[in-house]
Amino acid sequence: MPVITFQGAQYTCHGNETVTDCLERHGVSVSTSCRSGICQTCMMRAITGQPPHDAQKGLKPSLQDNNYFLPCVCTPTGDLTVALPGDEVLQRIPATVILKDHLNAGIIRLRLRPEQPFEFRAGQFINVCREADGEVRSYSIASLPQYHEAIEIHVRRLPNGRVSTWLHDHVLPGERLLIEGPHGECCYVPDNRQRGLLLIGTGCGLSPLYGVLRDALDHGHAGPILLFHGSSSHNGLYLVNELRHLAEAHANFRYIPCVSAEPARAGYAAGRAEQVALQSVKSLAGMRVYLCGHPDMVKDTKRKAFLAGASLREIHADPFIITHKIPPAGEQATAG
Amino acid sequence: MSKTLFDKLGGEKAVDAAVDIFYRKVLSDDRINKFFADVDMDKQAAKQKAFLTLAFGGPSNYSGKDMRAGHAQLVKMGLNDTHFDAVVENLGATLKELHVPDELIAEAAKIAESTRNDVLGR
Image 1 (cartoon, chains in turn blue, brown):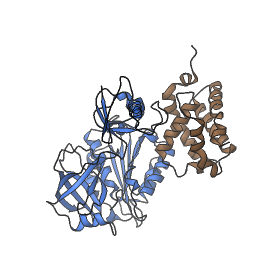
Image 2: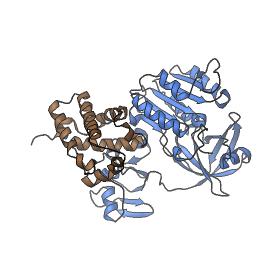
Image 3: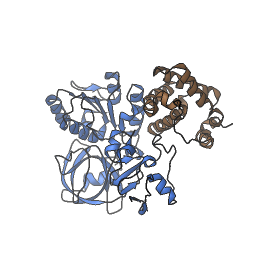
Image 4: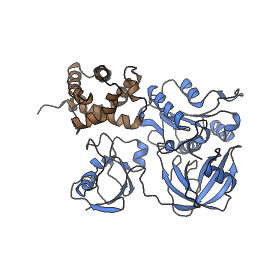
């Protein structure tokens, strides 16, 4: 009989029992509501083991790919280790800095080589821990596991940002950091190669989008891909040449760098990235939308994208990232 | 055995098709969208789905107590009959858009109506 491991304890499932029934029979209190696989209140993630596909019905494709499932309709066929979203077993593993360079005046790129097997997908994020005092910050992954062994993150220097300042000023190649993760569902899903993709990011919210974009191109995505990257100034943008080259090489990809607080030069759009995007794409019906950047921008744009016709299932923004406190004037996805 | 309302409407697939349309109407409706201004959209959509499943006569374990607790804060904000009417109206318009026959819309509205006193905390 299948064994469920949850929060460090093991529970044996009877015959046709669901994960929810099994946990409750053992006196474990879990949040649940419709018990019919509909309301998604009880969603969990399988850390090890594969939940039956029927228990993933109705979840976003990227959640399905990351082994999220609904325990109230999950009759397990094998052993499962399960966790609540955001409550996953936190195992920190060492990773060595193998590259550090500047993407622009305020943003550095770090490549980290995990010292243990570490599965991830472009667009997810990791938590980086400073061992000395346990400070943790989240950074999105810009690299593709199929081509780079290393995890690439982009770190913006925040005023008084304890971890970002440390990464900028003190961490050197060769140094070991502790990382944990990956988390998040801001990933490319190759379920429909004809679908339009709309990517909107501000500041170093470009980092996961760069990963999603290259993952999509790598999968031979055939539908239109639009990337709007915004900053207040031209100097705040980065990877501009790389993205222009990608746009030249792929007829279905358009890159629109946006500048909101100074006159836009030729080749740049004037305005905030999300405004420019929603003005130039009239109907979002059928499109998959990725939003990364300042939490206020993400929240506001999510609503506008939905009202402009995007299905809520197809709007991806990382809920974990926007829980961090970020100074309102800043423009970035991950805290400093 | 005669088909249930849930089956006649098309089951869970029909609920999925209705959620986005219904939620978009609610968010665009100035009479009621203030009640939805500051909520997590994904969580809210899951609640809309649960509500539509209930109104469609589908599997649902919602109790009157849940309904009261879930809306108590909104009642404090001034939620009243006119807002409830607006939600039922949006439900009807959603089903109309999905080409559901009038008699089935009336059945769904009747189920929604049965929650009125619980939702309004009476």
